[in-house]
Image (cartoon, rainbow, N blue to C red; front, side, top):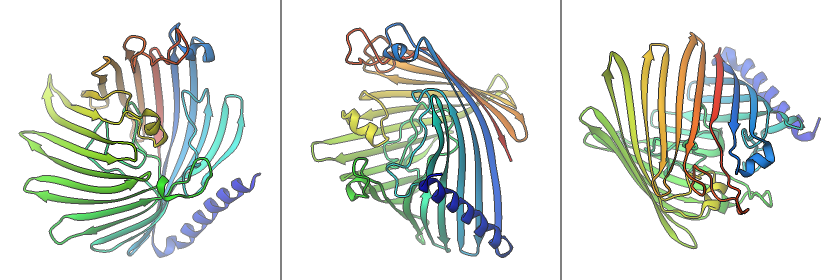
Length: 395
């Protein structure tokens, strides 16, 4: 057992022991889930991935998650423990790590061939809340902005637009505070601590420090954001409201880097209705990405695409009270190329669900979804149709 493993296990044991001891002096709640998932991916003849992985690749994984929450008066402690067992190539499932986070709360239990076993603390924070103030410190999740598929104002570990299971956002180590004004508006602030991936040292130009003002203007809500993220100045403004029976939202984000200034814009509209005796809801979004430095976006976990103009849309159809079907399209307007996802959700019981997806990339060679050029003549970073299936049980 490595020293790192001992530290993680000791932290988990101490946390559980402390909260159990405090259960008589507060409210203790323990919930969780198990998830079993499988992914299958095909590769066309001219794909570089086919040379590396073969005609198709299959990955499988299992997850156990325990969520623990203790609270008393103004104080609370939250923790989320994960045990992950993974099989398959990293192209299909990338094991999480804490290389850039302040605290190393991830440990690989075993690793060999295509098999990986690890456990980690995805949440671990203490919180103080009064009538107008909330302060939390530790590993937690933060989501800002009005983006539905693309989220330029979400500076801390945003979801990829093609992510299928978005139940939990991976936590980051930060200090967060919120103050509620008498008007109902509020001010939020966050400082995210990150390490330099090369030196391993905590550096200010790798972190994010942000302040966001959230207010109301009549029936509309607005956000004003000022941040320094990865050593760059970020200024943002967002607004959301209603239009008839629909809701709309928009964010405008300007980033001032050492080399350039670039703009990002997202605007969306969502609406729910009844048709053919079924509940339906739809969403449409336009995204403008003025950042052409793809390597920079990937390094920061904010790689929303290779192009400049995107359109995304989805329609959720409640086929039965237990079964939903949601076709989704992510379209790069300039290529043009697209990713079509057909997602299905089914309630197996009161505490079990099924989630599945068929993924169909559309586009010619050299396009984003058809397959970017690999740099090797006649070979592209292309993928064919893929499948995703997951069964979750909650307790």
